[in-house]
Image (cartoon, rainbow, N blue to C red; front, side, top):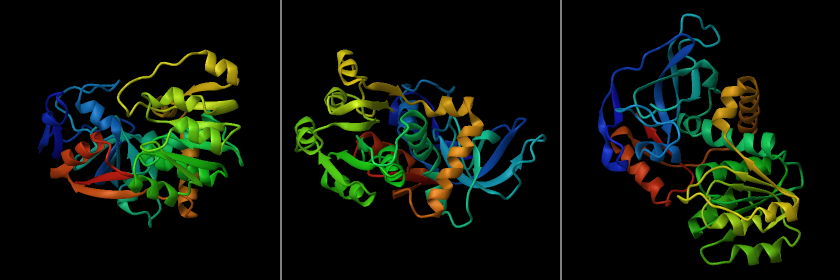
Length: 323
């Protein structure tokens, strides 16, 4: 089976196109012929040996796919051969075939393109869970999205708008600003040329209700100082590369909450609720309220280039691999 193979945990130096055995299909599992695979920041962490759940070598990265069901476990009747699906999995998506448990497989509409379907599960699953289950974002509240032009960031912007929030995006370039405005943000702060704290004090003097942070690093404390009374700060990830620390008097003085978002573990513990979330997201997609912004597509042989672009933080929106 053709795949992008990680043979050593040396980042991009340890991955190359190659071959892996076809994945084993166990009870309650589903085999998918991969039409497209989404590229995510944890893929880069995984091939560098920096992810919290590390597979044995050799392996293929890739945590979300779209394609057709080709085989199902002998005790499974909820899916059929030929079904169009999207799915997430621990790893293995950058390959011709992928196998995952049936709880992580979701039927998709006939008119959903493969690239959009592959860009759907993780970023929209994470962002919807964060904004609804963890932050209880309501109509009219103000949402600040850091790293708003990335995969999860754009998903959070679109979902925030769909939920009736006033969305502000924070980005670092003109190209990213255009993408975030296209996604529906009413304001965009360019922290490559403006001070976030000063801008927020002038534009939102009462502070924001919810902050969505997949970035971490030096920006975290500055952003938290812009939160309003009773605000919720969503800790989603650390794309900046460092895990920040923060004085705990800040949430005390703001009556605010630091809220962890670990969608993967939550979904494993709450599969029915996860399916309900995905049903809501597919409905939003069908109504045209959310759309994955796929900005680049790579053949399997060039998948390392997609990871390189992700690592340089130059990517806008989602990138997709097509085996």
